[in-house]
Image (cartoon, rainbow, N blue to C red):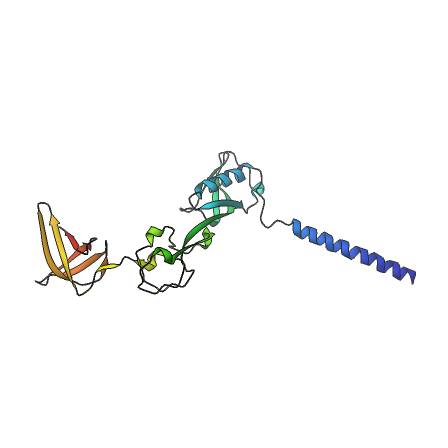
Length: 237
């Protein structure tokens, strides 16, 4: 009986110790590879930081490859296999002076950026004002495509798709307000070297400042011009 009691006491001590050791092992397990203190790692880190500087605030680079396992590399020269600003998960190639083999390093590039969102629900066709805009901040990898980051790119423009509160303002969902309307009369100014002619025509499509609009003349001829700030069509010859 005493032997059984002694065995139970030993097990009661062993299990908590094993549990503690297991938890310590889990806590000590890194979520990503630490940056080794070697030439490839340092060169890659500096290269990505410089390449990603334009992304936004708080740019961070984390190497996820074990560069210590790569062959020796003298005078490492990192490069990007694909053009563009690195963001998110990226692959970096490294040229070395001691041989022609290319080393490849995986990394994760993060940056905090801010972009414009709707501060309230906005109906299609509404013209944006400053009080309709708000800011949101997120990692660059989660920034919506074509999201605007300058209020001047949005204020005064017309929404082409209904927006709910918090939705990102995208350049491809906004347009200039129409200054020329299809079916209405429009003034065409044709200019060239040494002459200038003004005529009236019928607009065949809508257009805002800078847009190209077609117009039918009284004789049936169709001309194309660019909408100016006064809603006229400038035709060049």
